[in-house]
Image (cartoon, rainbow, N blue to C red; front, side, top):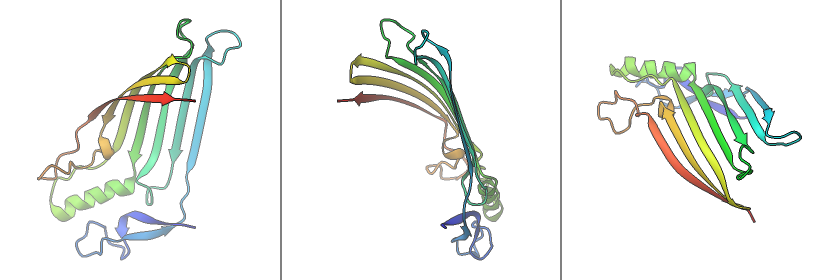
Length: 182
């Protein structure tokens, strides 16, 4: 059985934000969670084909006192076999939501109280992703990816902000993945 650091309280039972405490998280025994996965082919590109429009969803929940993320869900759609001239190409769109735990958010409130600073409260991180996987030739794929990230790090304080009152700004990520199979 592992030990997990308390998201809010120190080994003395004080808030981790309390200057009178050690700043060492209390040790909590055991952790558990519930995880669910669902995948479904919604429509086939052709009768008997494994290509078409597919849906997926994953979700999890876990205790707030020992986990930074207490709830998570993502899901999306994948389109394959939609073009006779490009039968192995794939197009996908997905979204992700990760909720910062109540204990971690309460620690942020404690920081506000102990410092007197309007420190931002972390709440969630959300991501929207759009991608296209193109088969250039068998065994060689190129996949451009676009992501919009709302509240990076759950809306945490921007480490470059001298006032420590501003969140990290939302972000856009553009990338290209290459996949070689031999």
